[in-house]
Amino acid sequence: MSKIFGAQAKVFMKYEDNLEGLSKVLSKGLLLSNFTVKFREEPPYELTGSCEALGFEIWLNEASIIPGYGYVIEMQTELSSDELSLGQMHDLSLWLARFSSKMCDINTCVLDSSANLLFFNVE
Image (cartoon, rainbow, N blue to C red):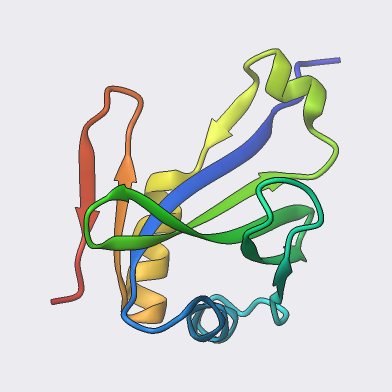
């Protein structure tokens, strides 16, 4: 049997409203089920949005890594802890950034493996 690979993505987003508002924009634009938005039960006890779609777990959180891009969406295939530990994960960040920008009309940014910032702007 050939190697099995999982997939993951991490995209920063510029959005002026709150996390709940962004979760609604993403749900509609990306055709996702509604995010469950609540405070995490373990540290850090921050407000987070989460949903599942097509075997992906998706999380939405506030972020302060990139100035002006106050949110981050992360997704990872479910049941892929072995692939993650073996480095067998495809990075879909650039695709998700471009797709989210076009479908949701929001600015997105990816921090690539060489610490370069790649922006997808709707302006």
